[in-house]
Image 1 (cartoon, rainbow, N blue to C red):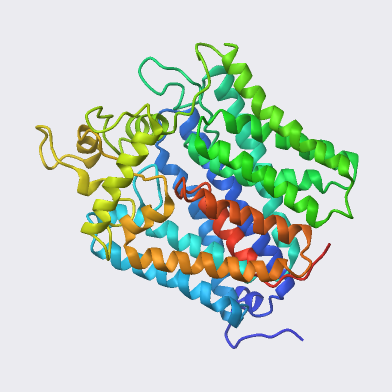
Image 2 (spheres, rainbow, N blue to C red; image 1 turned 180 degrees about the vertical axis):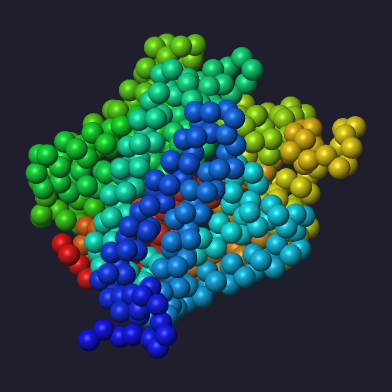
Length: 473
């Protein structure tokens, strides 16, 4: 007989009587939805110049609210055990300290909602907490599979849209990296080529592992086709993250095959050189002059992130400043940004600048403008300034303080430790794939930063690493 509360509603009774299996099923759909909601909302500003990129945060909010409700249900029904409590509490501490940082920040509005077009304020961090707790609480491996399948499917959508950007230059904010230099970089529906490279790194790991562990020819053909598509598009992000993602994906697939070496045929490994050749073909196509006016293949991380994205697309940082750094030299630019960020950390060690407000302590001139004008008018006039540092660990420290970094590392390290113990006991293919995707994200955070396309999936994978699933394989 089902339980019923006195004077309760039908909805509250549904929650009271929800089984673990039903919770896991709903959680699987809720967590998977974020792979598509942000992409769908990003489509509008990509195809119409009259629509602001601020709308993309709405896609995150749709899935974020669903998972916050699911996280609350999980807490009410005590789905979190003692072993999972430490990383959950560490994440909670990270959020609470972020709110303390917000109270001491330059702008409460930006700190909470995020900079327009970025959307990674404290509200987004709260949504990430919802994704993490929901994933931790899952008890069925089917939910983990749902997210991995959604990641691959979403990767296909991003990549197909990217092909239009690559071969036509249409629907792209990254056709040029300077007034005269054209590259037709792919950003898909991730808002930035670097953010797309981060997301496709996860999709490539998932599809390549599925390829080498394919049980029949149909699966092999489907997943190798997806893998080749992802690797090809990743090269057109012209980023270090794209190269690193391909390397990590190949290594992850090799490791997965060796773990299950007795269960799958060696012929599946042919997918690895095929995928590498797909990536190489992108370089050959460019160097042969087959895409418009692009002379040769180079990595353009700094020009993409600082000029095309931060300056031209969002007015979130200043124009290039040759006296401070050479924006065409990725190493010189990254070195300068790291040095300046460390100075900011030394100035604001406890609370940082406030979420999404790294650019504010760098501003040095109003350039004749009235002080009452919007900061999006002032920021671009401050040459050499930047709003993002492409190292998540430094970025968290600079914007939300050293305590936030400690809490972040506590979450990640504890999850890795629990995850390693879990996969050491004959893991399923799904568990191993999930762990390797998460580990890839941890590594990529050293060379890039969080964003509303990648981070929700990363924190969902993080939660799944330590969830107690009943294997279905």
